[in-house]
Image (cartoon, rainbow, N blue to C red):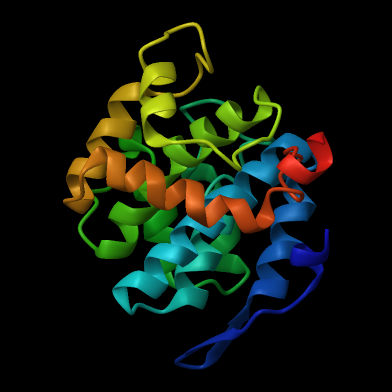
Length: 206
């Protein structure tokens, strides 16, 4: 994946340097599933877009999003994910701000979501996955996907049943944004990387 093989920027922190390239290496070392890698890219795109909108550190936010599920494949249970992955990240030199954002995206860890970064990763996780799922069943992917269609799918429990609907709604509330606005924002953030997410486009469908 071209996006994964390039360095988009750096985050300078006291006595450490973290790059997206390093984060991609970490992700791919522990995550072999193409579906999980695509989910990581989707959440990263959404969180980066919010960072730009809010004037926050896009690289820091993007790395946290990219790695939010990095250990899921090796720690697939609630008893382990993501808490068992935190020591790995700390050992590799990731800042605590990123580690805490990853820990807090899973409600069962008990780590409170207090920072804007923590709330944004949580808000984008389930919704980015759901928008991706919506795109997979449409002839043109997410090219013409609208919030009303996503809302309709959210009301169908059998569709993308693994997505926690309550967390989709809670995420928007935590960010203080209207759900339709949040959905539209995430859709727009994912469109530029549709091909990397394995989604069809209007051009490819024609």
